[in-house]
Length: 465
DNA sequence: CTAGGGTTAG
Image 1: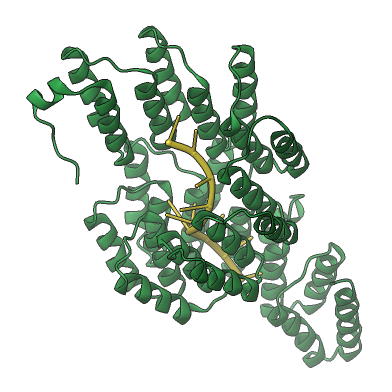
Image 2 (image 1 turned 180 degrees about the vertical axis):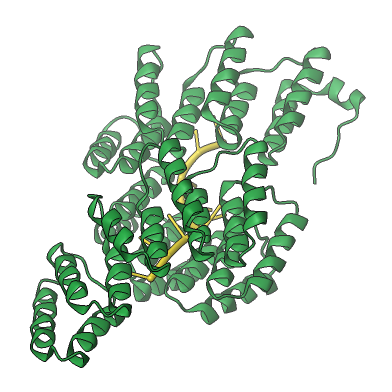
C-alpha cells in the first residue's frame, strides 16, 4: 500500500529516498505521482539524479511508450544529467519488449558511439533482441563473446539463452544447455525453472515439464504465481480444463496474488469452455482488485463481449481503449473480426479487416481465416474461395474451413481437390474434416475416389516424423 | 533498472 508522504517528510528526503519513492510509484504504475514527487523534491531542494531518470525511463518504456521514454531522456539532458549505460539498457530493453528491434540495435550502436562501455546487461538486451529477431546464431555469438570476455555472465544471461532457444524452436538445445549449467554448478533460479517449464509446455512435452516442476519443488524454491500461471496455461492449452481449474483452486487456496496475467489466463480458458458467466465474475474481480487493464486484458474482455454476442458493448469498448490512450493491436482487431463473423455480420467483418490492413500494413492470417470461415458459414463459399485463392499466405485453418463447408454443400470433388492441395503444401488437416470428405465421396457413390484419396492421405503421413 | 507467465481462427 503506498502512502502519501507528508511535506515535512519530503523535505528531509535525500535523493536516495526520493528514488526509492519514485521507484515504488513507478512499480505501481502511478507515473503522475512519481512526477509529482520529483517536482516536490526540486521545490524542496532534493535534486533528481541519474538513477531517478533511469527509473523513469524504464517505467515510461513499460507503461507508456518508447517515445514517452525519449522525452524523459530529453528532460534528463536538459537537467544536465548525462545518460549512462543503464539509461541505454533500459531503452534497449524497452524497444525489444515492444518488438522495435531495429531500434534496439540502433540504440546499442548509439551507446557505443557515445563512448559508453556496454555492461553485461547491455549484452543481455542484445541477445534478447537477436532471439526476438529470430537470429539465434547471432545471440549465441554474443553469448560466447560474453563468457569469453572480461565480463561475467549473470543468471539473467542464462535465462535469456534458455528462453531464446525455446522461443526459436530449440527446446532440446535449451534443455541440454540448462543441464550443462547445472553440471557447471549454476543453481537455477525460480525464473529459470519457469522459463524451462514454459518452453517444454509450448513444445507439448508435458512429461518433461512435469519433471522440471518436480525438480523445482525439490530445489527448495517455492513455485510462485508465475509458475502457477504457466502450468495452468499449459493445462488449458492441452485442453485439460478441469486440471487447469484445479491448479487455479490450489493457487487461490495457497493465497497467491493474482495479477493481470493470471486473470487473463483463467478468463480466457473459461471463455473457451463457454463458461462466460464465471469469466465475467473473474473479470469483475480483476477490476475490483485494482488491476489496471492493459491491451491484453482489454482484448480478453473484448473477446468475452464478442463470445456473448454483445457487439455494441464491444464497439464501445474499442472506443474506450483508444480514448484511454492504448493502442489496439492485431489481437484486438482479430477478436472483433471474429466476433462480427460469428454474429453473421460479414459486411462489418470485411470492413474491419480492411481497416486493420490499413492500420497495420501487414495483414493477419488469423483474421483472414476468421473471415474465410465466416463467409463459408454465411453460405458465401464462392466468395470465400475467391478470397482464399487471391492470397499467397495460407495455412491449414482456412483449408479446413473451406473443405468442411464444401462438404456441407455436398461439393465433395471440389473438397477432395482442395484437401489434396493442402497436403501437397505440407499442411495437415483435421481428422474430422478428412472423414467428411472421404465419407461424402463414398456415400455419393464415388467409392474409388474415396479410396484413392485415403491412400494419398496415408502417403502424406509418411513424411511426418 | 533491466530476465520468466496472459489475449485471436478451423
